[in-house]
Length: 261
Length: 293
Image 1 (cartoon, each protein chain N blue to C red):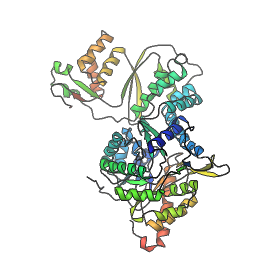
Image 2: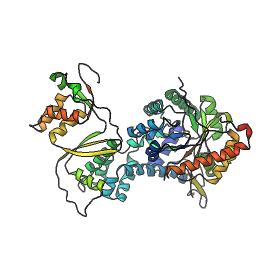
Image 3: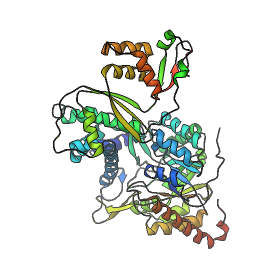
Image 4: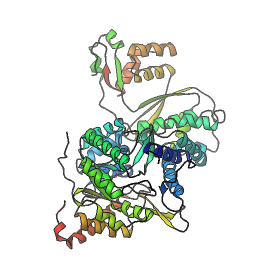
């Protein structure tokens, strides 16, 4: 008789991999219980494929639903979710999709799907109360350079080698022409959203590097150094005040205080 | 420490609150006595959680977990359970429940409620996990009978005996999903009324009703199997079984579940009204059960 651990292993193989060969005769239900087990396999696949479909409608628009479904079927077989929160499932799908299709055929596919993933994530974020510029008025400049900023949760930064923001806007506004020329161009995108809404903005390279470093909780001085490497004309003072006035900043962590404000 | 909600779950039928209805419910506050959520839909969705916190001011909320895998040999996902606890602490649920099933394996979540053999090994494992769940959540846990398509000829006890023994060992109570009773009895060939009659009356804390979908049974040519889709109205034989359950258990919090092909919220409210009518009519004939339990 199989142990419970062995039983669960073969059910897992049947549900995820579709491998019913090793199923022992202890299963009961109808004349062929293995076919009953297929109900669980079908549910596993269809529910997760539906989740992928829901999260990547623009990618499906680009590829066609049959192809997206085919890729999603393989994705859910190879990459079962790690947690019960299906809202978190699918972050690796863009990279998988690119490999599945072959990167050369649609070279911007991975970035486009990543952009769509980010849109979905920022749209369910909730903006928090912001810090005003006054909060920094008494901070010494050296202290400020060592300070890290906490930004709103609904922010993502994506560098792509194709102008994907334009392509995404065609989908979102349902204004796709019959032909759309797409030429390689570096774009540095900021995706910002809250409470169901979102927008995509292009930044210049230095601003992008600065904000992305700030989002990663690098000190302002470190973020500024990286930004200056990306663009010699970068103005850290202007970039900082733009962030604060734009309602991006919700808190700080400074080395001497060691905590959050 | 066990936390008790300051609220009581009303005896009238509530409905499952799913994300497609959340904004509507938050905006219009429809007349329904209580709502049940799947916490897994809210844990990774701050905007939905924010709306839920608004909604909970006007409705008692029950938390029905779908991802707490009490039957997995690999153990409970503590990180997930702590997230459920955090949400529960915010919304002060009137009931917390989950399934007699397993759904995780070696770090993978299989997104389904998978069957268990009923024997002493499984019993010890599930009992230990339910105690952990109750400890971490800090609240009593209601365990729901599964919807089944297969069983195990290695089982040494019936599902009823298994559930009753879990109640004895852990102090948990039971959520009787009347539709699951009907569906499993049909699929595995036993009597649904006898199953209801075998459940311990004093340990039933909640009833569920949901729709199923009949299909041709590929395991048995010419036969029909019932799939627990939660994608349809409640079937007539289930309403009859529900009346029997109400006769046996008295008035219990009853919840309408509809999770797929979700209709307008009004359709759920109509099913809840029907549950109230069935319960009211049944209890009128059974005066000893006229007070909510």
